[in-house]
Each structure stands twice: as structure tokens, then as C-alpha cells.
Amino acid sequence: MTQEARDHISQPAAEAAGPARDKRRLLLSRRRFVTAGGGAAIGAGALAAGLRLSQSDAPVVGGTYRDATEPFYGIHQGGVTTTPQSHTYFAALDLATGKRTDVAELLRAWTDMAANLTAGRPAKPMPTTGDAPAPDSGEANGLGAARLTINFGFGPGLFEKDGTDRYGLRAQRPAALVDLPRFPGDQLIEQKTGGDLTVQACADDPQVAFHAVRQLARAAGGVAAIRWVQAGFNETPESQGTPRNLMGFKDGTINPRTAAQQAAFLWVGAEGPAWMRGGTYLVARRIRISLEHWDSKSLDTQQQVIGRYKNSGAPLGQSDEFDPIDLDATDNGGNPLIPADSHVRLSSPQANRGQMLLRRGYAYNDGADGFIERWPPWQQALMYDAGLLFCAYQRDPRTGFIPIFGNLAENDALNQFTTQTGSVVAALPPTAPAPGSFVGQLLLKR
Image (cartoon, rainbow, N blue to C red; front, side, top):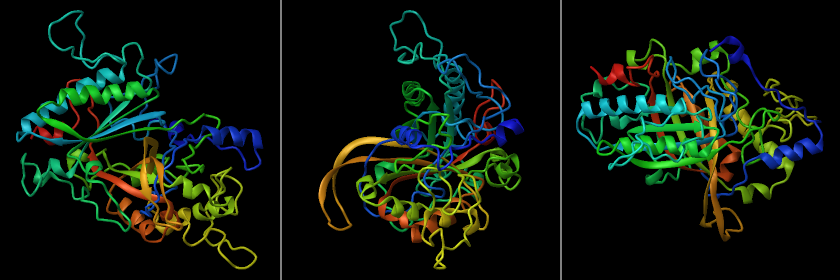
């Protein structure tokens, strides 16, 4: 990645940008509703993504968004620092084989397929006729790559499952790949939690993203099976800059953007095993948001809960989204301008020993279901099952997500509007360096 790409930040409009533009931006925010449930906080940095970076030195290729491609081979896996695409399809899978060679061959096949798919080709070469199932289901034919990225993650179950060292890899489990603790307010659903492997496809076309995971899942037959999936979207006009979450606030302002920040907080260094150096760790959380409850609050209350102005994204007391957060600023009465229990204060590097996460998230909408509200007036109603697939990338969850999120889970005013319903942690090794190699080769070919 070039330094220019790393340092590029799309600047937001100022607070006084004008009602027409603000209205247009809000209309472009994702619209979905969700249960209250009073779960833990959304995660450091007011929910999610917005990192405007390119994944490597290779330029995006193509004349239209459908033709555009992102590099697959290189150092880091795509879909981490890649400029966020508008759609994602995330899958967690459980391994069904007892043979390490099966896992290695699956990763080899997946790597070759991912290289084809991200280049806009079918997962495997397609015959013109045949009496066997086609090697590619074909629903993305003609749609182009649409900047597709695919990354693969290794959950704790690859190294040890139910106390068993299935593949002789227990000794290779990185110390940083820890099982997450149960946080206050967690209401995790078993069917949306865990997984031995993760696959995430991101693209500027939802069918391209789904098609990619579908092909990989087909190829895993007998070796791995899908445990849970989550689709998401994140429409972000270039004029808006940082994306807005379903609460209407800009999301992902504070991210490690420079090479120095990424080296410090994102990419695994010499402290990790050789097969993980240049990789990163993912914590993905499925978060429902009670937007009906949120929408009943005044604008001032919402801004106090978040700690930023809704229109500009600026910290309270400041004028620009990227102005420094001043935790010492007070009003005329001596009260903190950024409340003690605000999301921005509690998730800020200043409140977390300087630690940063790379936040990259997608909104989701999974229909509607019934609920009983745990906050007055304790009504029963039908609400949308919608919210956020929050993806946090870091060099070490023990110093990144776990302490930051633990702080939020205990104290964040945002907790009354959010519920954590799904979770997975995974190690994302470096990508395959060149054709003929595969993701995870240093680990699995021992």
C-alpha cells in the first residue's frame, strides 16, 4: 500500500453544510430496527467501519465498478484495509473432518477459487456441456468482480475442539487467539456464535458477494459445513465520507490509518508464530439495535450518548469530525462536554491506554420478529431484526477488543439500545503470496 493511500481520509462536510445535503445523507443511511434487550455496547468507535484505504500497492483495475478488481495475492488478506465495499456476506463454518490433509486441501482449493472470483472469473473453469453439476453455480456470470475481496480466518476450533487436538495443531495456536470472555449484557445465540473457519466476501454487488461464499461452501462438502451466515450492506456515497450507522451517526472515524498505526495496532509482528506474521485477528459481533427506542430520544440526548454531533460527526465541543477528542473540556457549569458514560469517551484511545481497533462494519436486515421490551413501558411488539455486523481487526485481542469492549460493556450509555447476539474470533493469516501457494500454508503444510 502506498503512503498516499494509507494517509487518505475523505473529509466530511462541516456541521453547517446545509439542510438539503444533511437530509440527503440521512436518507442514505441504512434503515433498520431491532430489539432493545439491553445488551453490551456496540464496540469501540460508535459501531463500525469507514476506513478509506487500498489493500496493497496494486491499483484497483477496471473502467466501471463492475469491472474493478482488488488484488488477491500479496501480503495482507483483502477486505481488511480495502476501501469498504457496499455489501458483505460473512460465513462461519465448522470442520467435519479428522484429517489435517483435508483441511490443507480445502484451503488450497479455496485459495485458487478466491483468486479466480476476485478477478471476475468463475470459481472454476466452466464447461459448455456436461452430465455433472457445473463447477460454478453461474448466478454471477457477467456481473464482474465488483471489487470483490475474500478473506479466510481460523477459529480456536481449528487448533483444539472439545479438548481434542484434531489436526496436531494445538501447539501452533497463537497465544493471542483466545476464547472471548462473556461480557455483561451478552445475549449470544448459539446458532450465531463460534466457528472453526470464517469466510468473508465483500463486494460492490450483493450477488457477487453471496455467489463467492456459495461457491466456497459447495467446495467444502464433507470437510466443512456452514454454521452461521450474515449478510450486510454499507452504502456510502463518496461525498459523505465516513459511513453512517443505523442510528444516523458517522461510524469509524477513529481507525489506524497510517503505516505506523497499522504496524502498532493491526498487523501481527515478531511476537506471533511465523505463520501469522503479517496477519491480523478478527472479532466479529452481530449486534441488534433498538431503533424504535433510539428514535424516541431527543437529538441532544442522542448526541450525549454518542459524544459526537450527529450531522458533522465532530466530538462535542468541536467543529470537525477529525478534531481531537478533548476529554477535559467542560461546559459553563463545570460538567464534561463529552459525558463520562458516552460511547466516544469510553472507546477512545485516551481511555484505553492508547489502544486502537480497525473498525469495519456492515448493517443488516433479517426481517422482523416479536419481542418484550426490558425498558419501560415494557411493551410487546413486532420489530425488525436488524442492526450491525461489527468487525474489529487488531494485532492482539487481549490488548485490543477485550479490554476496550469490557470497558464499554460495563459503562456505555449506548448499552440500553444494543444487544450482542452473535460472536466469533479468528486468526487471519497473511494472504497467499503468489499463485501455487495457499492461505495458511505455513501452518497446515508442517
